[in-house]
Amino acid sequence: MARNKLSETRIRTLKPGIHSDGDGLYLRVRNEGSRQWVFIFKRDGKRTELGLGGHGQGTAPVSVALAREKADTIRDRLARGEDLAKSKTFKDVMDDVLAVKEGSFRNDKHRAQWLMTLREYAKPLHAKPIASITRDDVVETLKPIWTKVPETADRTRMRIKAVIDHARARNLFVGDNPADWRGGLKELLPARSKLTRGHHEALAYKALPAVLARLREASGVSARAVEFTCLTAARTGEVRGAVWGEIDFEERLWTVPAERMKAGREHRVPLTDRAVELLEGQRKLATGDLIFEGGKSGSAISDTAMTKAFRAAGAGDATLHGLRSSFRDWAGDSTVHPRDVAEAALAHTVGNAVEQAYRRGDALAKRKALMNDWAAYVGSPSAIASPTKPSVT
Image (cartoon, rainbow, N blue to C red; front, side, top):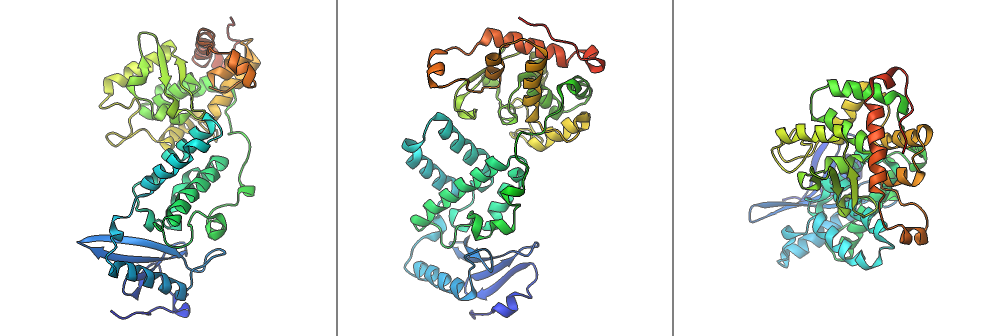
């Protein structure tokens, strides 16, 4: 097969698609204009694609000459009989990185953040061969969270970069790191300084009873999941991943395991009458372990579906995560429940290390009273027209 089919001049005129330079080297042109070099080969009927970097992108663009040099290196390795088709997946390398870092995490919270961002937000990359991951793969992984949770999204990017750097050091990845911000991502994603910072936009708590009334009238699992999120003041990820084994109907408790909590600590959530009613309804429809099942068998309800249901009920541009702020504002403005109890309900750490050492309990009984008051408030028909002051204990 002929080589050196492409030139810098010709590349500028290429339309979206994949274009051969010969003997396995290709340039993929995306619809949005980005261009990535890839090397494609088959062994024993299995197709393998290796990313070689972007053309004309960022501070380290891969020229035609450099792409051909990288392709020659791969051809030499194939000629020596190296089995490049059995390259590790992103998850394989990710697990190696987490194992290496296990002893260097500053605390349990730091460890939990690494685990959560890589296991949840980087999930679209998990099954991909590490050698074939492109900048476009990274962009598509980050897009859903980039403007919603910018700080977490950028941390996810940096941790993806760390995994690929690890692969590069072991010669499992050839080329520039596609998760490097200055390597091309800055042209494809909004700059952090331009993103909305601060708290998630929250619905005023006085508007919540009307929204929940509309949610109760709506059909579908999305509406049930949103109401359960509100009643438990939980994070959406905790609700979406909830399984039946975490629910104790007799004790009326939902125990979220440490590995699914942001702070890496087990969190017990007292369940109100309405929360139990929601769970009983879901149990009748259950086909698997997940409480709030999505459209596909075995999949959780999506954050997008929940947000759509929330806004269809009249929440405007408010975010689901903002429900936690609504709860906290209500507890502070309209009740005399202690601050520490409200913070514990949100699974927040209160006080310094000394205070935490002496505060061994999780104030479950007090939190149960708080959550009952919250359920009574958001479920009260009278609160829709004129919010009432909840009872206190």
